[in-house]
Amino acid sequence: MSTIGPRILCVEKDLPLVETRCSVLKQAGYDASWAALPEAEILLGSQAFDLVILSATLNHEEKQRIMTAAGGKTKILALSELTMPLELLSEVAKQLHE
Image (cartoon, rainbow, N blue to C red; front, side, top):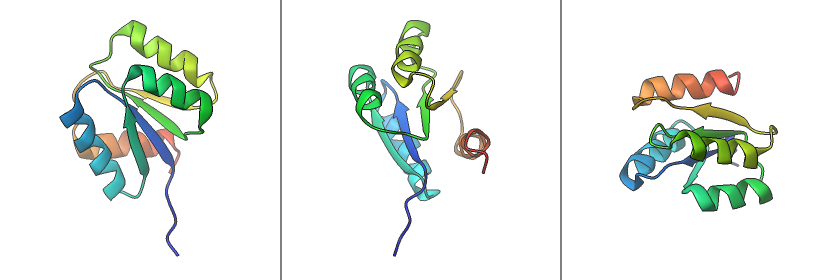
């Protein structure tokens, strides 16, 4: 029986970047998926996530929209620059208190 790790939603505009980010997270045992801004707002209104990762490519207004959609019930990790895999995994673990 396999267990699925914490659910993570990556919000990103850059498809190749987010595919790589989700792949890194999945290899580390997380249940990672991604969405662009409009879809992410819908998902956050209808599904539960343990963490939302906001890409550095999102502007302030876009990040605010996602934080509002999360409604304070979901942890948010807002990236400010390109984040390498080991640093990403470290930040995710900190946010999830692992």
